Image (tube, rainbow, N blue to C red):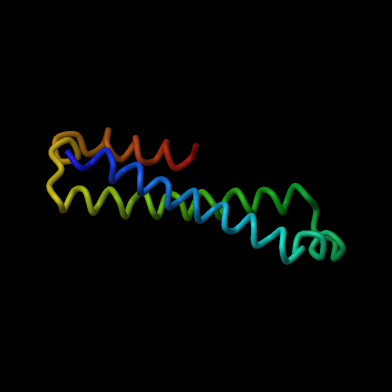
Length: 92
């Protein structure tokens, strides 16, 4: 069955995107600039977390829709449970 490896690949793509953002942030030192302009660290990290969750959930919904259209039997039989699994894995 291909759904297991495809799910792992999908989650790896999400994490690669997030790590790419962190690497870019470290190279550009935009965080230090924002702190110098008066942004509080709590606001900065909360905004980063919210944006990452939104991106992860968008990818999770996209993968769920692709699996549903593709006819993966577990997704069709248990759509609520399957999306909840995608949702929780994106938050972790």
